[in-house]
Image 1 (tube, rainbow, N blue to C red):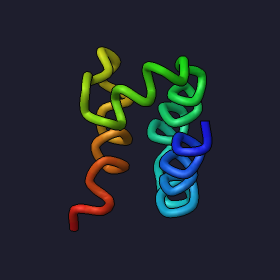
Image 2: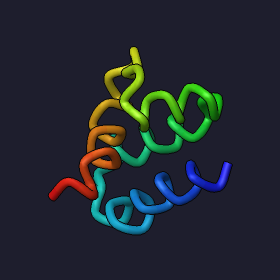
Image 3: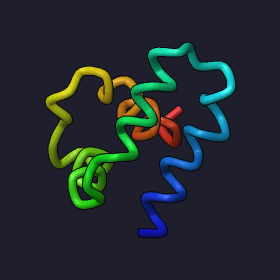
Image 4: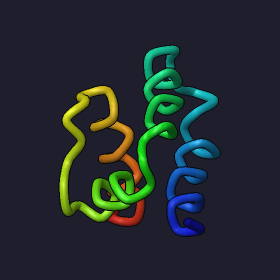
Length: 66
């Protein structure tokens, strides 16, 4: 899904290089989640149960609200 690629690509480009090992590992694990689930999280229709993903999802969702 192109929209997911754009949203996740933003975090990769803007945050990954400065992220710690835990955040990098969380991002890698996040990429393994099913696309429909990722889409619901990024659209704010649901939140991930896994706390490792919440910070990344929140950053992506708030990037245009600053």
